[in-house]
Length: 113
Length: 112
Image 1 (cartoon, helix red, strand yellow):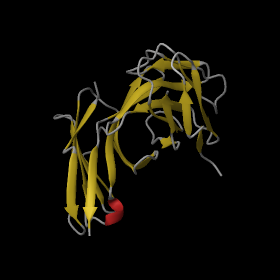
Image 2 (tube, each protein chain N blue to C red; image 1 turned 135 degrees about the vertical axis):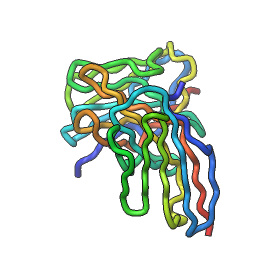
Image 3 (cartoon, helix red, strand yellow; image 1 turned 45 degrees about the vertical axis):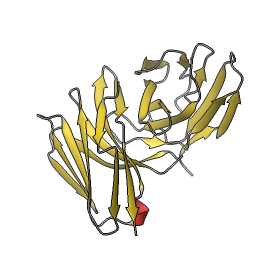
Image 4 (cartoon, rainbow over the protein chains, first blue to last red; image 1 turned 60 degrees about the vertical axis):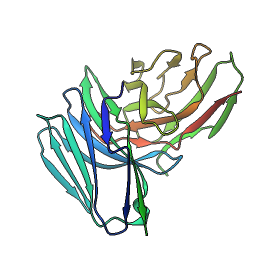
């Protein structure tokens, strides 16, 4: 089963509105990351938040992390049509000498004009 | 140009045949990963490797094999034991533990 579950599975908003996506995970983590994927392409890293951080900002992105609830949220403010994509959270857990990077199920975001 | 390259972009395989997907990076990254993505689904981890000659099974390793003989290369073999191999395969790398991953553009494998 997937480590992370995103909610909602799909989200449709109008340009200028804010988009919020949530991620829940199952195990302890070293950090949590958010990625974006345009259809049929590779993923692009957006932001990383460490397990001892609670909030992080990058441009129009705001990420929160609540390790007690094993959950994170990604907020995209003032959305644009170009933000249309799938968004995935990913957790990192160190396993011996390696880091296991595990992805969630994703949220498909549609931003309309 | 630095980056991570997957080849080929599209691959067709007959049932019962093994096939190897290539993943090469010139970023001098230590860690490399292989994922499988089915339509409308998330990414599922197949194998990952932190250093040369060492790799770990991910969540869906059955029917797959990998090698890490060189730091820059992490090929994935889809064997005939993989019951449903048709999928989009993504390779990624990161400079070391706990850092962001960079992805290739993927290989779409179809079994005919």
